[in-house]
Amino acid sequence: GNFALRMAYRAVETPIPTLTHVIGVSPSVNPKATVQAIDTAFPLYSFYFGRKWRKTIQAKQAAFPHLYPDFDEVLAIKNPYEMGEWFIPRYPGFPDSDSYYRSYAITPAMMDAVTVPTTVITATDDPIVPVGDFEPFRAVKNPNFSLWIQPFGGHVGFVDIFPTRRWLVDVIEEIVQN
Image 1 (cartoon, rainbow, N blue to C red):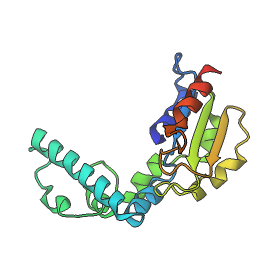
Image 2 (tube, rainbow, N blue to C red):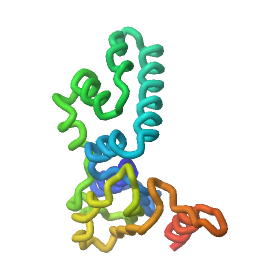
Image 3 (cartoon, helix red, strand yellow):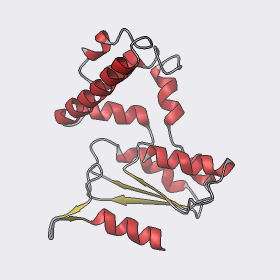
Image 4 (tube, one colour):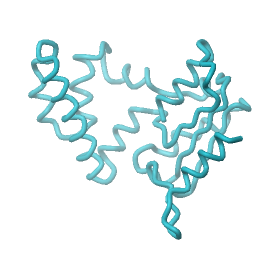
């Protein structure tokens, strides 16, 4: 979701001729708050994302041992936020994690500028992306931007109970066809 919204914003300066609509589903607009929520929400999320990131780090270290020789310390860290605090100042070229997270943040001003239709779909009960992060986006006046805050859907869930299906697929198909 975050990547899609950044792409919509970058298309203002560098248009993508075949880009007709951007849809961000449960996008992290405040990456620092999202990573912190991963650590404080249901413990399974922190375990899942921490394990996934450690596997990525190990693969990177195996592929490029001359570039990444000292990952043992970060691999011992259990939660993603603390992993980021260790990792970010050492490798991506940012002085600290706040600088890194700000560089990936999505702002209302960015969405006010988009020139391609852009839709954000999120849920009030998303345990990973705090719904409060979207409040400032209600003020966006750009007709190319729409914000859909659903009461239920969790993080990319959007499931109808009866019949059990993900209604999100139908909604995206409708958006793209119109």
